[in-house]
Structures are given as structure tokens and as C-alpha cells.
Image (cartoon, rainbow, N blue to C red):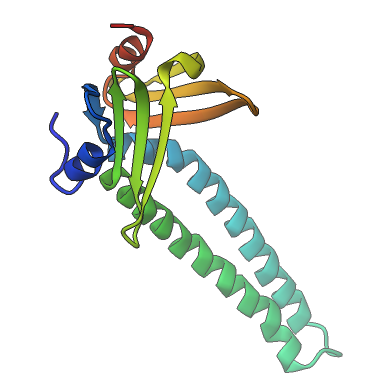
Length: 181
């Protein structure tokens, strides 16, 4: 699959002379979104519980005749803030996920694995991993064929993990990384 027009020049500029791209693609938004849904649901449940707790406290504060009216509205106000966070938070998370999917390039060359991310301010974050430094590859596949690869990179500082998430055919990409030409 060809890269989007705004990402191809970024990858081309990154390649060393004579380096051959064996595979390049962008993450699939629906695969990244699927990964986030569980986290968003968990945070949403927590915010609902906190909101209910604050409204409950506000109710009991309102039936206490010794409290002033200002004290009654503090728990209710905080509950409203939690409720708004529960609504706006997931929208922002999914928006950032869309941006990540549209502005990330994964590439496997004959020398290394490259991850390029274009940030909102236009700057580029580049991570590359020489293929001989990859100690282990873990693959996670979904029924639709999408999935992720987690690379354990061995270097002087120990082992680091890096992920290629939301890729269309993780098995084929894993085989490309493992195969020496």
C-alpha cells in the first residue's frame, strides 16, 4: 500500500544511501481504536463512580442544617467537572489516536526497522532499530488480521520494548524482519 503523500517524503529523507524499503505502511485507525476502547471504558466507569459519589455527598450536605448553601454546591460542582471529563476525555483520546494513525510511518528496510511520527507542531520523531539488535519479537493478532508487533531491542542500556501497533498483517511483517537478505 502506498504511503499518504504527506508521509512519503519524510520516509524518503530518512533512508540512507542504498537502503532498500522492504515494507512501509501506516497504522490502521480502527485497530488502534480497538486497543483504546477497554481503557476508555475503565476510565469512564471510574469517572461515573466519582461523579455519583460527589453528587451523593452533595445531597447529604444539603440536608445538614448546619452547612451553608455554598458548601452544598462544592460537591455538586466537582461532580459536574468529573462528568464533563468523562465526556470530553474520550473525545480527545480518540482524536489523538486518529492523528497518530494518520501521521505515523512504520518501515522495514534491508538494514533496520523505522518508526516515524509527525507531531502536531510539524516536528518529526524518528526511532530506528537495527535488525541485528532485535532480541525478540512478540506478535498480537486479531481475528480481522490486524495486530501489533512488540520488539525487544538489546543494547548497551539493557532491553527496551517498542511497538508497531495497528498494522494490517503482523505475521508478514514479522517474517520480513526475521528474514536476512
